[in-house]
Length: 114
Image (cartoon, rainbow, N blue to C red; front, top):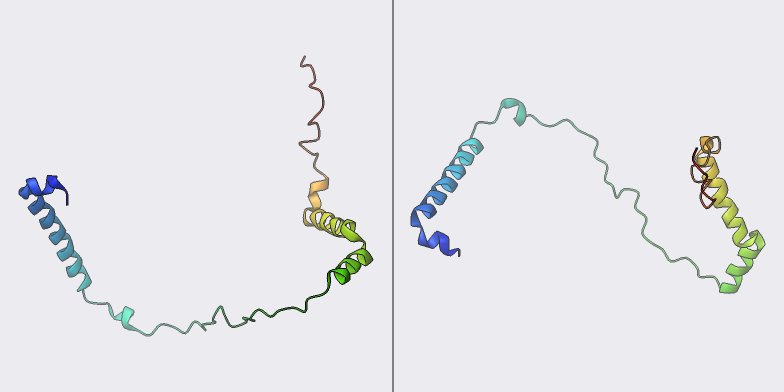
């Protein structure tokens, strides 16, 4: 316990009185009568649980690494996946191609200012 509070009993009493007054005012507010509108039944909101469509995890059949590599080679390898990602980014921002690249001049020698 704080020695300052023990050495000053009047400060402790003032602190306790303030806490008691705050607690009593809260009790008075808590005992206020409830308006009639608050006691009415709430309207039905059509509750739907967030877990309604839950599907538990199921293990997938593990393929051999050779089959996985063959499938990747058949679809075009890593280049096919990179092309898909690039096409997805271009279709996500159709107006982006019309705007100039603000970083296009990076790495060039600085121009002399007039």
